Structure formats: C-alpha cells, structure tokens
Length: 84
View 1 (cartoon, rainbow, N blue to C red):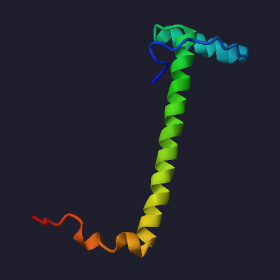
View 2 (cartoon, rainbow, N blue to C red; view 1 turned 120 degrees about the vertical axis):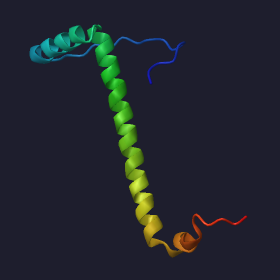
View 3 (spheres, one colour; view 1 turned 45 degrees about the vertical axis):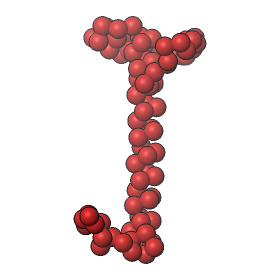
View 4 (cartoon, rainbow, N blue to C red; view 1 turned 120 degrees about the horizontal axis):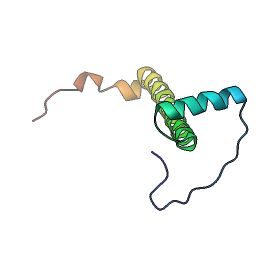
C-alpha cells in the first residue's frame, strides 16, 4: 500500500472542523506519528477497504451466477475426484 519509492508526493490542503483536527492531533500523538502520515495511512486503508468490498461484491455476483447456470454446474459432481 502507499506511494511507490520513486513516486513524488503531492501537497493537499483540506479544511476540517476544529473538533476533527483535535481528534486527529490526539490520534497522531497516540500513534507517535504526524497528522499528515496518519491521514495518508487512513486514506490508503479506505481505498484498500473499498477495493476489498468491490471484490467481495463481484464474488457474490459470480457465486449466484455459478449456482444458477447449469452449464457452470454440470461437472460439480466431479469436483475433487482423483483422475490419476
């Protein structure tokens, strides 16, 4: 996860509430990191979480297709059999 070793960093300015800034400062201090590093890791984790959600959704869609398509299930009885 994260930027590649040779990838250049870009500056991002965002506006957050005082409350969120206080919480961010406390969390960064708790984890002995900067606010910027904390936010970068949070954004990376969110992208990873969304990717995993998309993959899970796709797997669910494929599973229902597999279960309902006779062409895909014709050889289910042979699954796991030894043909040697």
